[in-house]
Amino acid sequence: MSEEFLKNRDFVVPGDEILKSMDYLPGRNTYREGESIHAKKLGLTSVSGRVVSVIPLNSVYIPKAGDMVVARVIDIQSNGWVLYVSPICNAFLSLSGVRQYIDTNRMSLASVYSINNLLYTNISAVNQLDSVYVTMQDPKARKLDDGRLININPAKIPRIIGKEGSMITMIKNKSGCRICIGQNGIVWIQGREAEAVIEILRLIESQPYAEGLTDKVAKMLDNMKAEEIKDDYGDES
Image 1 (cartoon, rainbow, N blue to C red):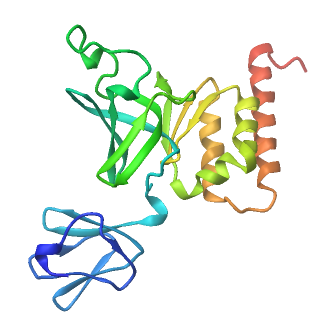
Image 2: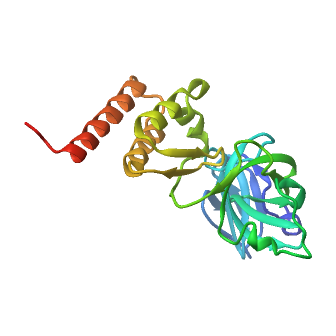
Image 3: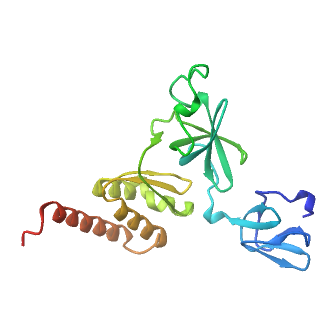
């Protein structure tokens, strides 16, 4: 690839030549061979200054229409909000994507959603990675208040959700926590047992295919509940 065609978000496979130039430096997941920089992993190119890297596909979220994501407001424009969704793309929430009518002559958009607000929102359309749209019209969509945030490898999110939502439903019911799972790998947790839930989610992320994982998670949740009861009423033994 010549220097004039070097850009972010090009798809590459291991061994692909990303660029032939001594003016650029190989970054994460790339290596130099002669004058060329090559990809070490399957992923998308990332160019920062003069450093060329590859973002692995197994650790990056590629937006898909219909996905629910946890996103952060990073900019406010005259006709909507720009949201951070993943390292490779932002998304746009237009005025038509919110539930209430907004008269921009009478109120500022920041009074609805301000910078750094967290939203649980729906990917409504993906034209290209630089043209992603979200909506708050989905019944599940809402603004997220105080809570804990953790990042999970997006590839492991289906295991955390479980078949037909079985795993995450069990975690919610037994922990009493409110949890929003973003397909983009960002998870919001609110509740007394947030720390214990984070420990459980990390376990699932690290051992997604371990034998007896569901039983192990259930046991951890039961132990957590027992400790909670002991804390509330004291050890009567």
